[in-house]
Image 1 (cartoon, rainbow, N blue to C red):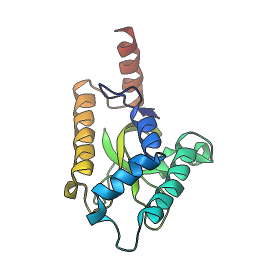
Image 2 (image 1 turned 90 degrees about the horizontal axis):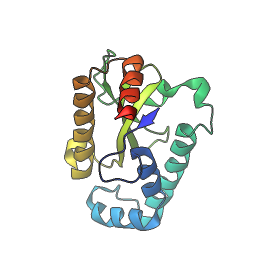
Image 3 (image 1 turned 90 degrees about the vertical axis):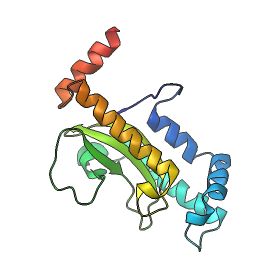
Length: 170
C-alpha cells in the first residue's frame, strides 16, 4: 500500500487524512460547514464520536495493527461504483469501515492484488460524491491519478515498482 504526496503537502494523503480525522478543531469546522448534510439526529459530539470510532478502525487496518495482513487489502477496498463487477487496470476503489452508517472513506487506485495507491479520502455524508464539493474534489483526484498512472504505463505492481524506482532516481 502506498499513498500519494500531492504537491504542496508535507504529508502523504493517508497521513493527512488520519491527522484531520483526529483533529477536534478540523471536525468542528467540518460539522459547521456541512451541517445541512448531517443526519438530523447527530449533534457535534455524536459526529465527532462517530469519526473517532471509524478513524481508529481505519488506522488499525491500514497501519498493520490488525489482521489485515492475513485478510489482505482486497477486503478493505471495494469498487468505488457499486455497478463495477470486473477488475480492470487502475480500478477506482473506496475503503470504509464495517460500521452501519460509515462516513469515512479512503480512496485509492487498485494497481494489482493487494497493491493500492491512496489518493485521499473524505467524510462522506451525501449519497454520491458529486453532491458535495469536497467529495467531488476527491473523485477528480482519483481520476487524475488514474490518468497519470495510465500515461506512465502502470498496469501491474511490477510496472508500479519500476515506476517508483525510476522516480527515485530523478
